[in-house]
Image (tube, rainbow, N blue to C red; front, side, top):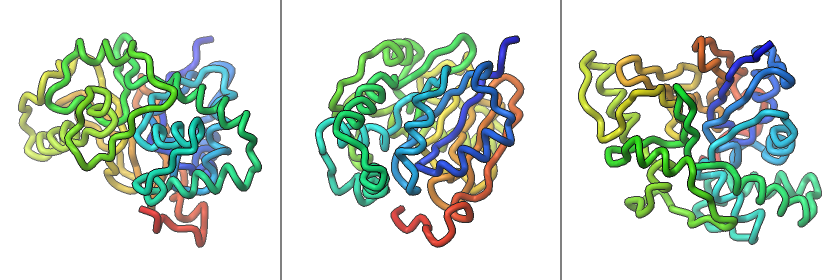
Amino acid sequence: MIGRRLIFGDLHGSYKALMQCLERADFRPEKDVMYSVGDIADGYPDVYECLSFLKELPSFHPVIGNHDVWLQNWLSSGLSPDIWTSQGGSKSIASFERNGISGTEKMELARWMSTWPYVRMLDDVVIMHGGPGLSLSDMDMEKLSEESREFIEPAPDGYHIPTRKADIVLWDREYFRCCQYDEKTGRKHPIGLWSEQKWLFTGHTEYRSTELFISEIHRFVNLDTMAGSYGCLTIMDMDTFDYWQSDLSSQLYPGYGPEYW
């Protein structure tokens, strides 16, 4: 029996939310295929637990998020810029230190994370962390899906205009904002160069604490329901659009709070 194609939003170290969602979705690791829009790292305290669990799934297919890039760099080289540690990175470091993770295992995780692509292209679905912006075409997406990533990745800061196409799909929020505007007005406007022939699944930009953003007009889903702050984690079936959500992360980790954001 062929299983489901499931995908979850920005996780940000909320292992308890992940476990709740998998239970509520009746996840079957021997049958279901799991995808992720990235940003598994940074935020709530169980980053190592999330990574070690997901690494052992028989069919897990993530894309890289900007927070994952920062963590990968730290695991492989010890790099810890202030922009990372001040945005949840210190919680990732603490998670590894609390679990007593060896340098060897850190390197193994970094190598695994370096295999996460910028973009995943399926027959009917495209997955990336941010968005295509206004300048990336279908051909650009194809090339990014095939591009090898560096073991130590250039780390954009999110404040400057991206200089690489890869940085656009890590950081873009403009495509989502344009979709929001069209859904609000009920009118469709062309957005950049992306053809929208396939459904696009992203995260990166927090929407609302429990409400998904789905644009039928532009065939677009934003799965970031704020699991890294005051919201919940969402897992969706990409074929039926059924979805399951955890309790609020801030309630699953009482007294912890997302003050790092």
